[in-house]
Image (cartoon, rainbow, N blue to C red; front, side, top):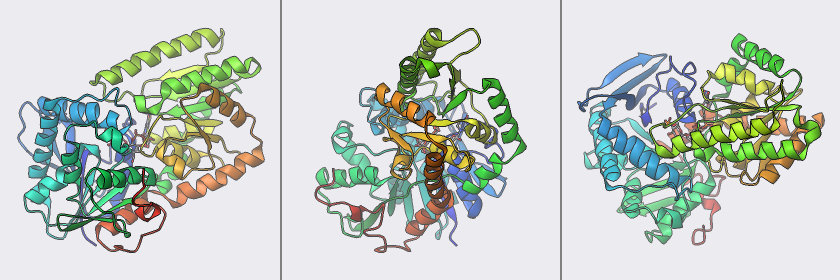
Length: 479
Ligand SMILES: O=P(O)(O)OC[C@H]1O[C@H](O[C@H]2O[C@H](CO)[C@@H](O)[C@H](O)[C@H]2O)[C@H](O)[C@@H](O)[C@@H]1O
Ligand SMILES: O=c1ccn([C@@H]2O[C@H](COP(=O)(O)OP(=O)(O)O)[C@@H](O)[C@H]2O)c(=O)[nH]1
């Protein structure tokens, strides 16, 4: 088995994982994938240093070797807070109103990608498979090729890929996409994002997409496919069975005194649709005064990317909105929205998920959304809660037995909350067993195996026409 060199913006040391609580889905997924492979996980330490030195901090924990570098403040500003999270993140989540273009961000992004390439280069051996993650590092493969790396290299994008007309608003978009075509494999979460990418390369670059999902570019062949990420089902269900989960379950249940519980768990990010969710819940409270005192929404929202103005803004907006809704609907011994700005370890989350009658996962746009899958995995199959899921989350393409909603419509959200609260046990069980089968089978191990197999070049030509393959598309007409 070839060694894996995994490269992502952030590296999370496994010992700390779970305890920190505020980590996103990427860290959760990669920790578990790396435990299975010999190899190295390389990226930014999350720390800053006065001046960039390129010093590699190597550590081995829990069978995962990590190699991290510190970045200097200008790098963090221009690359992470700048081009990654003020330009690409909003654009990739269809928010061109929030997308900022600044020449310095672009330069910082390229400089940090160069720094990543120079630092990881000595760690790459000839037979290694190189697996790069996410929008922070789109040009890394092309920079490594320029430095002589001949290894098989793949990119997996954890976010959506935007429609061509939106992407065309990004200065130098052609150069960015052309750099991605230096990878051997490009993976997306869903066929929807894959179709948008294929549309771009055909319409903007005039390239032909072959029937086996490949694109021929400058004498090389690149395969693009959908690989929907999953949760570490075995690890998660073990955490869900722990004493910590049991204690969290009991504490939450007893605190609501017999009321129904709705739960949301999201990084504090405008893409997660928290404001719209609160509006939908408020509408439910107004439309159903008879049930209004019987339901509590617990929203866990650890702060994220707090140096970026749009994240400061969403935090302020949500504080105002929560205060307003609670002011209008609270009683002396009852507050309808419990809004908590901190992260929790996953075992504790598992207990909260299980205690909740409804999982409210309503992003306006999301690459996948692992919280939706964790909510399903945490339920009691004999008395499961109901998952309400945004039609715009990548997860909606797999979790079709959830109650799918349009998160922009407070009316639709309110009606769906009512429907979920009134849903008979038999229907809850029927829906849950189908959701559970998908979450259990399409787990993170399946995701990793599928991607690594494609990266190793073992399934070329094999997947045309399968679910998730570009063979699903009409190549000239994909939108
Ligand atoms: O590292 P941060 O800036 O704190 O952000 C956390 C992660 O957020 C994003 O997660 C995405 O990956 C998930 C797993 O594939 C997916 O379920 C979710 O829909 C995505 O939003 C981001 O893409 C990661 O790079 C960040 O680490
Ligand atoms: O307090 C928290 C909030 C979230 N998470 C984890 O962070 C991940 C969020 O992943 P998701 O794909 O839903 O969204 P992302 O944050 O990556 O956009 C999930 O595994 C959550 O269990 C956590 O451990 N503690």
